[in-house]
Amino acid sequence: MVDSFLGQAEEGNKTALLKLQLIGHYIMGGDFSITDLSHEMNLSVPTVTKLVSELIEEGFVHDFGKQGTAGGRRPNIYGLNPYAGYFVGVDIKKDIITLAIINFKGQVVDMRDCVPFVMENSVQALDRLCDVVNGFIAKSKIDRAKIFSAGFNLSGRVNSKTGYSYSYFFVEEEPLTMLLEKRLGCKVYVENDTRAMTYGEYMCGVGNNEDTMIFVNASWGLGVGLVIDRKLFYGRSGFSGEFGHFPLLDNEVICRCGKRGCLETGASGSAVHRIFME
Image (cartoon, rainbow, N blue to C red; front, side):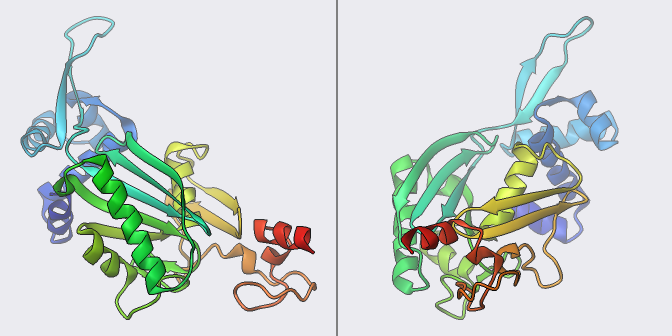
């Protein structure tokens, strides 16, 4: 149904677009009364009432009943129906995977951490990844038809618009999203791990919905994510944030990108590991 909304909105369906905006307000602001939501969206109360009623019939919004107020008539409060659908999140590191399932209200309903995994650019690694994700979903006992989409975060050059990863799992001509969708049976999105972490902090963490913020991901590698004017910044090439590959040092150490002297070769988890071993 969400994909249907997106398709209709792209075709210029005004009602579908307003429904998406309404769901967005619930995601960002929590539960609302009809009156408060009409103020937030700058729409008439009858229009918002109609939209909310249709979303209730479609299963996306729930009427949580009347809530207490300081005085006067108590309004009904409406919010996202947590059981409308589910989303799977997969965070892929160098040697582990973290998985989680959230409901439509954004609450974590299942999670599995530190699943052993070897990150490499091979069909075998891709198959192993899909086996882990499929096993996790099966163990959760959530109806597959209720899973709207899965999001994968991985390091390197990832184009979230085309669905390609040029650093890992670049094993066939088809985009990674298509390869995963065939194996998982649901819509798939991919994103660079640092940009995903940046947006997570912006939405639900220390970013606190600031208009502009910088996020530094100092882990095995070194990356930077940017939010500018409340939107993730991708840059002209779509691969912004590869801060670790800025040529800065004269250490002659070969970086994983193939160049020498990248900042990452002196300031990252992999650099600390190399220096310790040396």
